[in-house]
Length: 186
Ligand SMILES: Nc1ncnc2c1ncn2[C@@H]1O[C@H](COP(=O)(O)OP(=O)(O)O)[C@@H](O)[C@H]1O
Ligand SMILES: O=C(O)C1=C[C@@H](OP(=O)(O)O)[C@@H](O)[C@H](O)C1
Ligand SMILES: [Mg+2]
Image: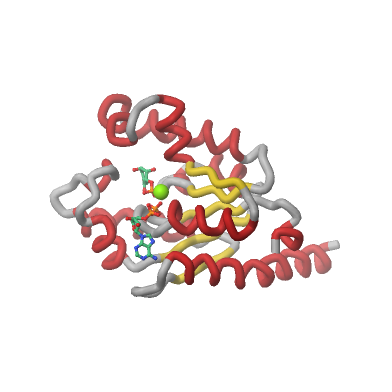
């Protein structure tokens, strides 16, 4: 598979709780790729948590850091990149994501909510109605996530391993589509 990909990196996008970090690690192992999580790079570089950054600097400053980090990551091949759920919001980020194959992990809001109900590390969910917040964020972002190369609809009860396997199985179909597009256009 990694020879088929020819070193092209994978970028996982999707909502908070979709499993980008968890599934991304597994995919990196399976592909023999490096693994990078944009949130981890930001917290390591700043020495602050995502909660602290949102509280002390604001979301706009966080988004700028996120774009800067993504720009640097996109210079590398052979990575599986777990992004933060809001990476799709900035147009400039798409030019970096397009360096690789973009995979949308699409998880129903009810499932996201059960996964994140006890979680305190996502500042945007520190809201009186976290499920409603997830719903409105998804409504806003869905058309952006839909620009991914690969759309993986995750079902309840599917393990991270099963999801990673489905991504692996789906990759050749996207590469084939890309190649046939090129044939038509050239
Ligand atoms: N397929 C899955 N089934 C059950 N729980 C999962 C699954 N994938 C991820 N999780 C859990 O959901 C939470 C969010 O996962 P995470 O990988 O951090 O998502 P993201 O990076 O997309 O926000 C974590 O507690 C993780 O263990
Ligand atoms: O959806 C978002 O806007 C965010 C998602 C988080 O990452 P995960 O998607 O890994 O939870 C993190 O970047 C930050 O809390 C903002
Ligand atoms: Mg994550």
